[in-house]
Length: 267
Ligand code: MAN
Ligand code: CA
Image (cartoon, rainbow, N blue to C red; front, top):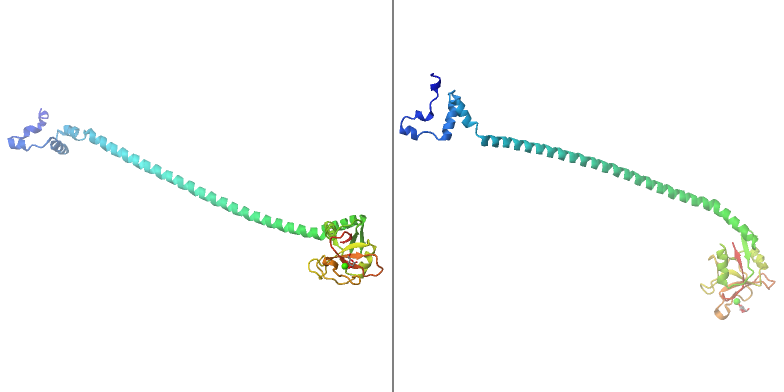
């Protein structure tokens, strides 16, 4: 029975008005209750209900914890995403460097190949010049021999049938890989006796009057002018012909280059 009376209405403990006036607010009382609870007061059960039973505070606390968890979670996620990006970036950088290396190697190989190719081309050209060209030239010589070319010494000679002016005659020879005949020996001078009466030779002073030069630019070594020639008659005789009508070996005359005559090519 006494057990039941242990609970005392908190307000009944204030015995006078001052005490009543000084009575704590509801909250203060609630905390007093807590204190009482701590002291093992029997009203602990009610006090517990009043303090821990504040749902707003609990919810706020829980919300804070949840928010904290979310923030930490997001932070971790953000960190892992950033790490992933960093790893991706690192991998890309490595891959780029690897590709740059490959590119450099390929460039080097290409340059080496180009260099080898250039060298081979040069070697081929050298071999061609040493071997193929002379063979081809000999073949052409043989062909030409059949068509009126005559071998004498180390040269081949072509005696024309038709007539052309000096420039056209020379052009004909050049198209055959030859040029108008250059006479620099008595033997050559004698050989040409077989030619037609008027035959162009590769001698001209068209560039500078009186300065006779062979078509290869060389000066005269042996001279076989007719007596009184060259006389540049009418001031327009700049090309030399071989005049085959005379018995003498001195057969050259200068005449206008526009005349038409036979010609001799030498190769
Ligand atoms: C004569 C001489 C030569 C000249 C010819 C031109 O034969 O005067 O020197 O070249 O005429 O036809
Ligand atoms: Ca003359």
